[in-house]
Image 1 (cartoon, helix red, strand yellow):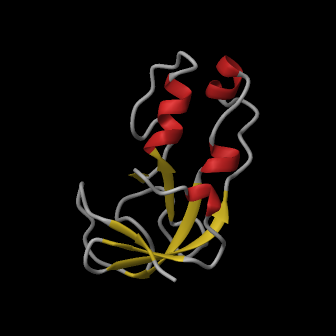
Image 2: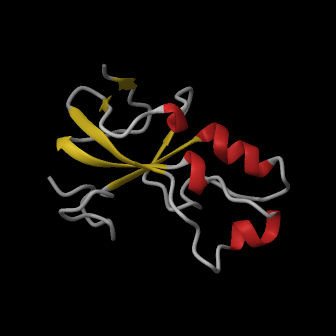
Image 3: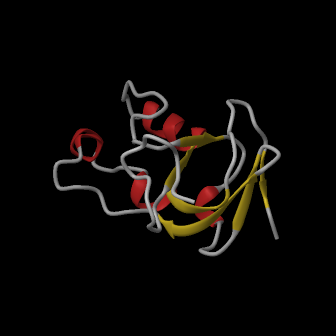
Length: 117
């Protein structure tokens, strides 16, 4: 499995998929940023899951067939991170997560995401 077809981060490495919670995006909007889904380069935006509390190795089921495994929590911002420059902070270092694909398939907007035990 290599991640999302056509995505720049697809390939055989630990950051095939990036996820960020809608709640994290909303937090940055409250700081005055006019940002939307994908502006943090996340592949999947979640709602109602505290991604920062997940542990490396935990798995998520997306829809009926896709399973991903958390490989990294957060990432250091680039030196030229525009969001950090504008607000003094960015949510990606603590709240964005990365995963690799365990079982592939099709993901659709609105699919349920379940944290597996």
